[in-house]
Length: 77
Image 1 (cartoon, helix red, strand yellow):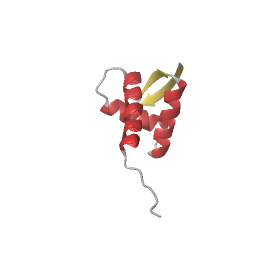
Image 2 (cartoon, helix red, strand yellow):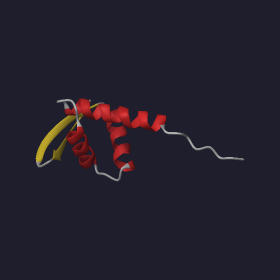
Image 3 (tube, rainbow, N blue to C red):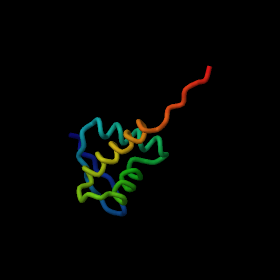
């Protein structure tokens, strides 16, 4: 587990996640043009669970599910 501290909505919070989830969150932030704090803020604002770490894991899951469900473009030869 890696624990990181961030400022969200004017307050400090800490989130403990496995390194793989932090890597996925970094990819999500980059893809959306956000900082890590900005992405976590968005997850915090839209979460349906009281636990921010769980909400972050679910956000990663949804992001990858969306990517898998997106139609793939193939070259027409």
